[in-house]
View 1 (cartoon, rainbow, N blue to C red):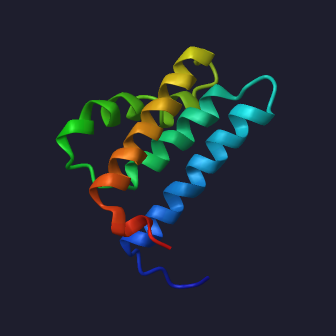
View 2 (tube, rainbow, N blue to C red):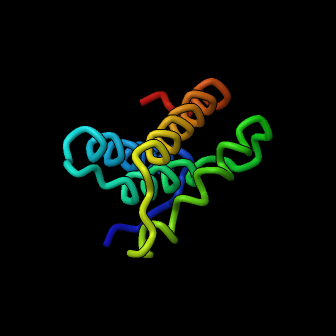
Length: 106
């Protein structure tokens, strides 16, 4: 296993992968795996700095969709909930691209 240095760019790449998975699942699977999509959205968002006050509500909202819905087979998320989490996560990404643009330069 390669040693990880956990640089901000590495965390950004991990977040990008989680978002790619969420987007892919939302478009290609039927029935839509709402819990899996919400889980990957929350994972993507948590890899960014949690100190930005203007997006803290969005971060808090999507955190509720992380572990419990993913592993509680009795809980089902609606497609509307999944779409909300997906949009919140994209908004967080857009905010971060403006605030710390150097992380998004390849």
